[in-house]
Image (cartoon, rainbow, N blue to C red; front, side, top):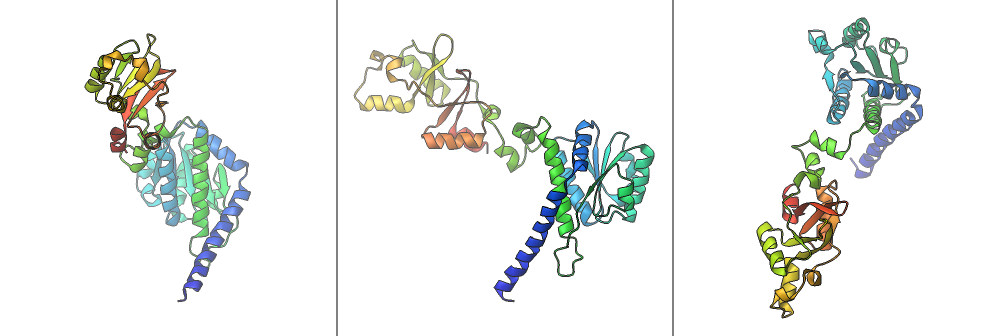
Length: 318
């Protein structure tokens, strides 16, 4: 097949699905807000269910909720009828995804939920379906055209259902106390979790500090002992006044200054060291150290040093 024709078909499919998403955006109404508030007010589980393609969407959206620290599970409709209905407790929220809203396998779940007084949120295209009529909140997918040439394969409908589930999850997240650090706790083993590490997670509190009134010799001893290639200069209130690095010492020797004790710390220190807060990402710290051509970074709080990291430690942690 000609490449131009292939690209044309591919773009047409995407255009059809994009049009569906545009309609979905316009169709969002108060029911969406009600669903968000219901989830925010709940202290119980959120249980997703759906069959076939809708089941895969339900699994994915449930996983998104779970990754943001909410108790969320996927319930397979067929397994539900053979004992798994027991995972649904009073006070849970049931989110059922079904394009037609008439799938036989979900009827047992609907009946069980109604008997238990469990709130049902449905994501469906059919507002006259059994599912819609038995839901507390209906999130209806607008009229659409499936993107395949036959117009029957779940394409636009599943894209809209997934996008609507993502919108629900992200909107709920917007009103919860959940930040990047919280997210990383639920992804400790993955690339996402590593990329979301902050300096607080890896910084050393064994600081190479010396008082501004000490001698250069004392600064060298501390620098050698702590092995960060620098010393943080502080005043009597433990406020940061400057920094001396091993590079500063090398430059002094090149200048012919052999008697370092003849120098005061103030004469050698850089009075404007690079400092950062403990909540910045490790990846951001690496970029900053490379940009400033430094190998160690001071973490400060209200002008006082609380931690230190070096470039190697940061690189190894991501």
